[in-house]
Amino acid sequence: MQTNLLSTVTNAKSSQMSEKINHPQLCEWLNAVANSRDKKAFTLLFKFFGPKIQGIARGKFPNEAQASEVVQETMSNVWRKAHLFDKDKGAATTWVYTVMRNVTFDMLRKIKGNKEDNLSDDIWPLAESMVSNDESFDDHLENKKLLTVIEKLPEAQQEVVKGFYFMEMSQEQLAEHLNLPLGTIKSRLRLALAKLKVQLGEEND
Amino acid sequence: MIKHHPKFELIQAFVDGDLPASLSAGIAMHAEMCPKCQEKIVQLTEHAAEVSFEEAFLDRFIVDDSHAVNNSNNEIDFEAMANLVSQSDDIIMPEPTLDKSIVFNDKSYTLPKVLNNMEIGKTSHIGKLSRARLQLNENEIHTSLLQIEPGGGVPQHTHKGFELTLLLDGTFHDENGEYVKGDFIMLDGSHQHNPISNEGCLCYTVANDALHFTQGINKLLNPIGTFIY
Image (cartoon, rainbow over all chains, first blue to last red; front, side, top):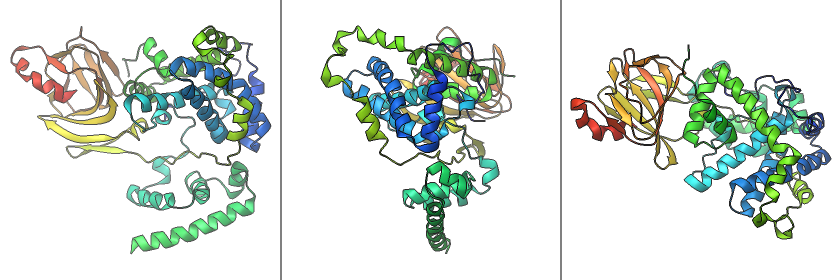
């Protein structure tokens, strides 16, 4: 089992929650970002969390530019990873806190240890890994090779291939997830598969 | 059953992101195997988030005049930044993760996912001990995977700093009892012990100083202390 801070079902009205934060509202905005890439909802989230993140980052980083970087990087991850948020597994505040703490941790490590290994998401995963190693793959070598080939695809195609094969999402789910027309998903998948065939064929010879 | 857990202060610091990567990873791996600590982490994280994002929290920082809020150069235009960030159509999918494993003396161990992106150094051997360093660049803090072959052990020693041993596989025992997979054993300079593994084990170890052997002829081994941790 993966350590996942958000995996235990927490009651949204647990004793830890104060009345000072409008949790249902934040949750709604975050879901709007996840489901419909809602820019207005994102701006509202940004106005709520931005100043607070800046305040906290000022306590951890000596200079103002770094504190701003934490704000930008955290909110940028909120925008790009909102689909990993699951309201049944915890509050929006807890999820954003995890994103902020992870960004801060990796930045401090980069500054202090000169290491850009970005370990935070391994230590504090933002979502349960959707891939089970045992069930999805039997042959690790074959797998690694396949992955290397997939990594060479253009990013737009990689997304679709990974979602379709590794996360076993349907084309319809992918369309919704990536907020793209179904036709685009289908054509990207077709293109990607054509390339993979060529690549794997070559490498198998 | 797991009997040894990280103490509360350590879990709190973990949740706050204040521990080095080595200890953070140790706690994360322990929590994977220990639902009780996992539950504590969930609660403390929820609480930390609540405290961080309450309106009142900001007031604590405004008093500091070096960060005067009315300094317009320092003020972020949050709306502009929101517009900038949301121009990107990228979304980040979780990378499919592959199990990472390590082989010591022909025995292969699947490693916890927490270690997936850590660089592992070459393995060195002394007697029934094998060690591979994890390259975390944390100065005086050294992190390793340590295998003890069946019947092997570490001579009685103490530490000038701290020593964390997280048992990842197998069992060992010392003067204080038997340890099982998942046990999180934190020792400091006031402890002396002599771990022995009858059936062999794999440990994740973090220490901020070399071991110091304390007994009889083993004192001659002191240079080896730096090998083990």
